[in-house]
Image (cartoon, rainbow, N blue to C red; front, side, top):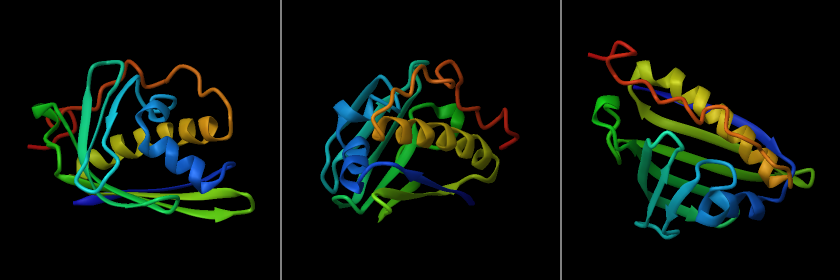
Length: 155
């Protein structure tokens, strides 16, 4: 198992970034057009991309303005990353009037690391734009689907 490790500076306070990550009405500004988020430890986080693919997980840790940890998986059997099978950790640190965001997505099967790294790069960029008051525009991955396990050579 490997992991995705991404860092981005966001020109917004940690409280603003935290809100975009944990409130469904803000989450849809940058990630997906549909989201259902129960922001409490044990609460669920679910979103559906334009292509119909759905991600879902459960919050493990929530420290307002500082840290978010949730389990993660896909509602597609062919991806072989079932809900709850991986963990996303997001740490927010204030810096120079903005936020250093550090995301680590753990427990991914090796062939799925690169597709998820590319997805997170796209969505963290969109998060940074939205958090700084911009419009992230159309999602360039809107018509893309996470590859199936077979497509990446995962037996």
